[in-house]
Image (spheres, rainbow, N blue to C red):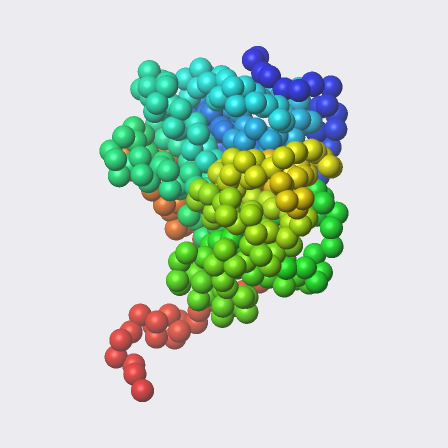
Length: 418
Ligand code: ADE
């Protein structure tokens, strides 16, 4: 079996942490048990490019239980948990290619390693795997039957590939399922980003001004949790509707140019490029702490900041202090990479339970469709989304009401008015 991990001896720690995550993933566990019996993925090779975490390990075990041959690489050079990668190889016999802190060359070498296995299905988080297949490894496209995408940024990339008519196999946009982005993007990002910032800095949020750039699902979750920690939260936006929502949610909204002068903490969650630029670094307070929790490390203009700096040093693990010509210090966390996975452990397992249930069931759905899906980016079928919501509620012991026959009739009628 091929693999490339930091140290196989770390497997002993990894297996315990995976078990800890599994304890909080009831929906995925039920799918795993059914997959073990039914083997719906039998004979399929699956290449996954995901953050290599304890929760991802649980998903890989599920796919393997379903009969798939699974190959895993990292979807970010800094997000791998080395003990998990080791355990997947040693205990689960899953070919894993991922090392925390790998450079760009190794990152892509690992993506090529999973492509070398001639996958029938891909599972991506950010679309680097699909994009490499379509640019550098076109000869492998003939084996591909379908794929899934985990995140907003990846779905945007894949939709532009479909619009440009270059996408060569169908994709299911797991991110767009309601049981994914309502919970993972909001509550997962909200908690894990605060966790990453605190683990990296050990600074007090109470009483500080915390600037959240972007008020999509991730921004909403982050702003909500920063407020919960006692920070004064400022939101920056480019979309008028999202800005209005932030105002009505009780946040102060202003342009980044103004917020740059006021913030103690900054975190970007926009999915866009150069959101905090040189002109903004120029006016920040001495000691400002700047992080990103969007998928790619392009949201902070680190080149622009570099040009202002006379010296840089790692003052703590994950905190790089840029000393500017005028004596001010700007602290960049985790090299501008998604801070919740770089300095913390990503979203907690309870929320990944639903995201990864969507992943497992979407792959099963594609296999069942037997290549009948058109070349496009498709939604997760509503019945899968609803089934996951029902399973999660049941696992939490929460019961809900049912419509009475009278209510059902009322909802489908148009003649009952005032
Ligand atoms: N993305 C965010 N959090 C994650 C986690 N815990 N595992 C895998 N992918 C993630």
